[in-house]
Image 1 (spheres, rainbow, N blue to C red):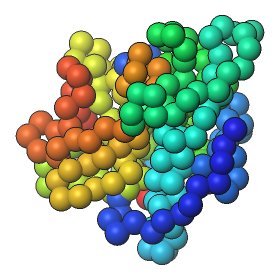
Image 2: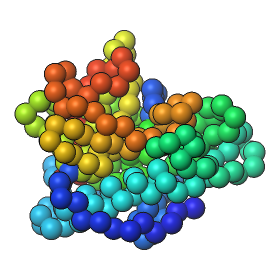
Image 3: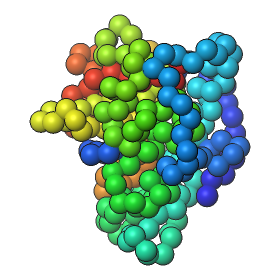
Length: 222
């Protein structure tokens, strides 16, 4: 399902949802999770940089590598066609929006949180990572409320809430930071709202604009 991406050292560290590739396959949603730490794991600066680069590599691979999906719960497993449309990996067919793919174990639930957890290789993720707002409420000091003066780094996860219901929202994985421009790869978004897609945001004003959602900040593994 997953190909081995070429690792590159990055110069910058750096769905409407109800629940919203490395050398080894990305862990599936049903795999037991590691212990969650509300404080930053104790790792060296070099280890952090390596893991941030690995997260970005996984996200880029998810954008450009065929991924498994289904149109119904017991239906045939199909493969996506990355790049149709551009900068999108559509995990559906002919306008479908089934929310059934390898990230959420084909369960039909909104999957941006599942996608973010897979990009972190299910390490140090929130206990209830399928819920987008767990990335904001369950990571303690590893969640950084939005400030125009504090940019995220590669590998961090951006968090939005819905304007009318702060219990729900969206998350996306940072793959590049250049000046005040932040690029992400996100699941459960883009084409037919059932794609992996790349987006670029400006880190200013009220924060990155994603539809009519309210930007809240970013979560970090470290």
